Image (cartoon, rainbow, N blue to C red; front, side):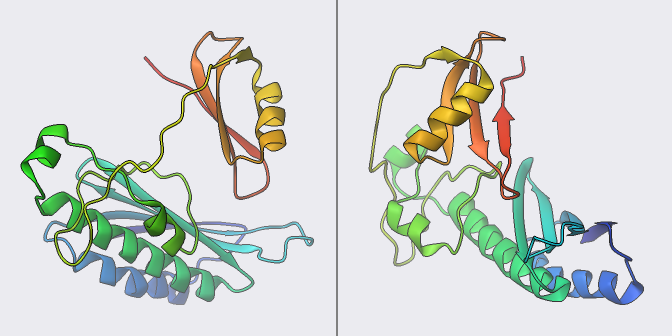
Length: 200
């Protein structure tokens, strides 16, 4: 396992780097090949931010990216929480991608997590991972439980953010009037907005 630790507004002591490595060792046990892991430790300089110490971990797995981040008042606690989160995500990833379900599932190549699974997670956030297959041990085959269609309207990104807030959603798809492309705005953990645009 190769772990790269970087920091922002924090002194990366040998003890802190060693702690990160030790906590992330559990993630490697799920895979034979060495994992490429990047850990970013950040301390916010804003005194009004209570949970100012953030540990963010990104793992490269078979071309997929698994990411987790946790913020608390203590960096060691943040590392503990994000290490647990990453291990859960890797365990779920391995189970879903290595076990085969039904022939129909293999033909379609798509499964969607149930609402119950989403609710069981302490936090749900966008990652670059895709869930492909459900585990075969004591869990139901996941399926699409809700479908919704709506017309995409042309608008600038800042107006899309206002629509998202008015709807109370965490993300909002629209046609970017500036680029003529389908885009998505979303809420970031730091309270700001993010914009996702296609690249061709």
